[in-house]
Image (tube, rainbow, N blue to C red; front, side, top):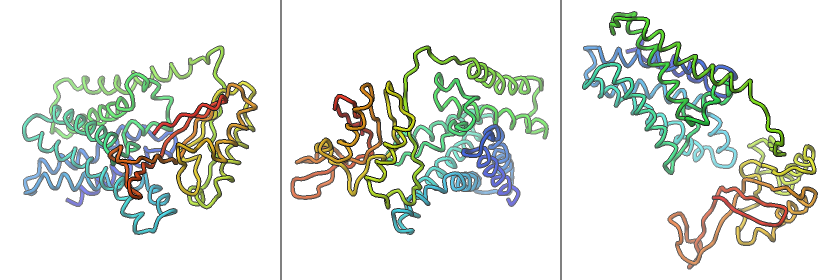
Length: 356
């Protein structure tokens, strides 16, 4: 059993090393699940484990918890900057443990499937279970999609220029296909999965690795800019998240405007600012946003750029006289409020749009 836990920890270590922000280490994801698959295989084939399903869940859960915590420890840091440590721990458990539990459940279902069918079909079933978990964890109210496997290539985008065709799930399938092929080669070498023509999985592995990579690299290095590109300024003020809300809204806005001006051209079309770039002591009332200091400053700034638009993250709210939405909360008799971590588009002609 100890060896299985060591294999699970090895998987967690490989997956963490392959995860952003560590640069150019993404290919480690291609073998990251192999030690865990070996550990699960040991449990399945063992005659000493009585509760194999539980042991598979716990072993996979160890990998998932360690990998998640090591990769997204910053979630706790960012929350604890604005909330008491105890509350920050509770909230951090959602991405740390809930996602890990869903990952472990995918392996638990894989173990169940192995009882009904052969190894190869079960492995493809595992890939299906994993993608289902990722889709769920991207779609429900407790969504935390950053740990979707396809995001692991964020620092090695040269390899994934085909994401515009498949989406991020194409990356998840790619990672799993390579792990499955490497694992089947391991099983064959150990005599646990006889393959008559060994060249088939080796050739398949080469094709799965090289074809997407080659296509992506050729596309990346042969890309040509359009003749008339749009002029867009993307601003990242790099404000320390631990002190962001200790700065006044005016200071933060001044930083954004100063950075925007420093690189803008007369024909700049868009200024893109980050999440919660527009904030104040309390959320902005969307109905009265035009009267705020921030809005007036932005309009004055856009006077210099007649084609300019500011697309920014904003903390806003709407008020209703009844429970208009499922998320509206009564804050006074017959007064309901919805808070939004939203985006707003402000253009030079004073048009204003909010996107929840």
